Amino acid sequence: MTPSAAPEITRAQAWVLAARPKTLTAALAPVVVGTALAAHDGVLAIWPAFAALVGATLIQVGTNFANDYYDFVREGDTADRVGPPRVTQTGILTPATVKRGMWTVLAAALLVGTYLVWVGGWPIVWIGLSSLACAVLYTGGPFPLAYHALGDVFVFVFFGLVAVSGTYYVQGLSWPPDIFLAGAALGALNTAILVANNLRDIETDAKVGKRTLAVRIGTRSSQVEYLTLLLVAAVVPVVGWLVYDWPAASLAALLVAPLCVAPVRRVLTHTEPVQLLPALGETARVVGVYGLLFGLGLAIG
Image 1: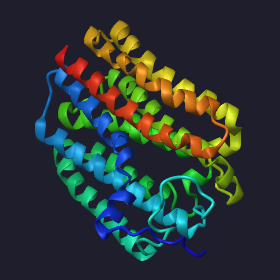
Image 2: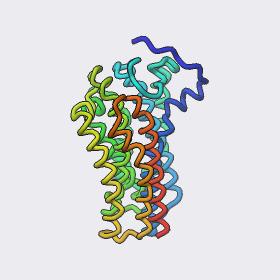
Image 3: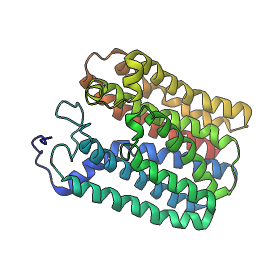
């Protein structure tokens, strides 16, 4: 594969581009909500919470580097792809450089994880190792999850259920059932980011054999999936308030609804992939604002 002409940007800008900062709300919001639940239950622990935030961010960045590298070597990224430039495919950074960056960031996440293991013990060992492994196996390894329609499951589990419950556990050292309910909300919203991305790439992914869930189920079903995921996030605070006695302030998460209008309209009415470009950032913004409002409502209440 011949890389496209590389844009004229600095090396530092290239690494920021590869880190995909707009996606970082996917890592931050679950930690905010898990910490807010810990505060609500009176088990808030600042340093473990901070370490969880740093570790989650590093895993997200490492996953993004891995995707950039492995999608290139598997020829999943081509010049026909619509979207922000990938630093490996465009030749901005060499594949070997991006691969080293991936391992460096994941090693830093492992280092942070050693502290969390000291705090939380064996459960965090298994959570940390599986998270690091899946960061690579999402697009790498002999059975890349994203290429076999398992990306949506991976995001829901690791950027929802695991991220929220793990953040709570390193502070409260317990697994109350409501943390998994909260995790489902964040997992659903983070999966919605992926659905918007895969809808945009549905044609180019199909051409190169990247069998995402969107490729397998088609555009219409993917649009239904997107709406369903947003609905799940809307229902969770109500269920938590009614069943788990979450404070009424947690319902503030529903104030994110107006921010959903634009991306929903794009997902439902687009006719060209380029029309979905803003939907990714808009959905990521929904995740960030939802996590902040939800977290504040839980903590203050």
